[in-house]
Image 1 (cartoon, helix red, strand yellow):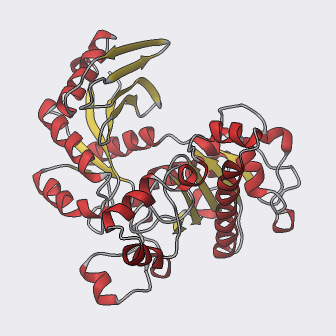
Image 2 (image 1 turned 60 degrees about the vertical axis):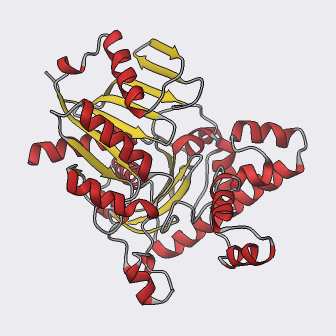
Length: 398
């Protein structure tokens, strides 16, 4: 029987899961339970061409995972028969302590509890998912794979904030970076695509989804990334502001009578494209722009402007750049974003082929002109497969 890994990504009100055979990369099933704890919840499971769907209230994460396993069994995928070798959990923030995939035990759970303030929107629901799945599947190794791991060894100049040293040390303040599983996977796939050794190419990876981040990878090592202590820093995102003047926080506290919680919620949930243009779905944003909506146009322009700034900065950080890769939902599917992010950069060695850029293909592909010194690629990310393979490596070397 081929090894199978169950990959779980637990959010505050949802659970996403996949059954994957890491050696072949085959996805056996892909499911999600949404709106957990609300009056009306939805559970879906895709197995090949078949889709199973259930509606009705799902009280909590325990019920959500049990429902997920029921749907899997209904589809003929009984976990007891799948030679399940591990359950992999995506954990957003590993702090300074966790930077390698590791088997989860009670000591790790206690430490993750301490790290919760570093990622209050992400780590607590992940821990709920881990706790529930460890109880439901006690006989299988549960392995944490950390979003921050790829950026653990950032050069000190890139990882360090220019704030009082003692404060930073006491409160573990540094630039951790996020989406690391995706950035590492895509950068390796990109090197394979151009048939170059991973440790011989310099790359810029643009992970553009509702959350968005950029990274600079030199000779197989991450040397800079746009996200920092939290996933709020960097590019403009669907609902997050990205980079702002930190003085805005104090200003709003003093003059607008906003609490820190108010400001934090605004910057994370009501800013970015949503805050500027009223819409964080790029498909709908483009429709608004086509209909002459000035706010939507400004939101798009700000998004592109910030993205171009980071591309320019990382060209300077790397000195020589071999590859620029677009990935994630927007990066893989929005030709206009790719075009506008890199237009007018021929003098920097970046030229797109308009026809290739417009291709609807979902395969890894080149979209740069033959004459472009920098190769521009679209590389579909697969964080779940990367997590599954990391889990198998832990199990096989234990």
